[in-house]
Length: 129
Image 1 (cartoon, rainbow, N blue to C red):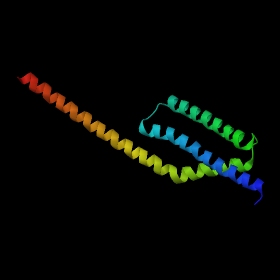
Image 2 (image 1 turned 90 degrees about the vertical axis):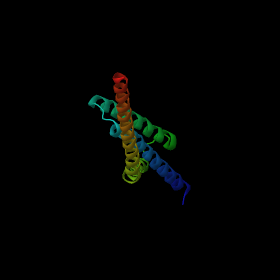
Image 3 (image 1 turned 120 degrees about the vertical axis):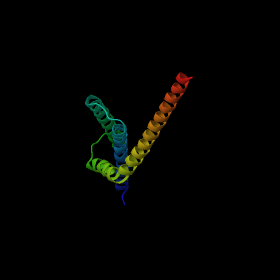
Image 4 (image 1 turned 60 degrees about the vertical axis):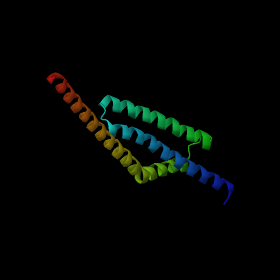
């Protein structure tokens, strides 16, 4: 394989990796929204932050690995990384984190309810004496 093709293949694989990083970054916001409901204005701010961050990352990939040139194989590599992560890994990661956070919320809710019940019992016992 000619050296130029090897270099393009390396840039393709690197851009696929950075495409996965973009979706992982989006999963962070998706998980936040799954854990706690946000108001519409907060969701809009999160989307703007994501778009700015993802745009900066994409420009940095072009600048760092391709000397600022926009090439189709770099865009294709990023798209492949996005699709691979989004359809392959992301559902498992998000599902795992949502399950753990829901169980943690339930445990905290039970603990708070239990401590409130004990506090009420102590207050009743103190008043009865």
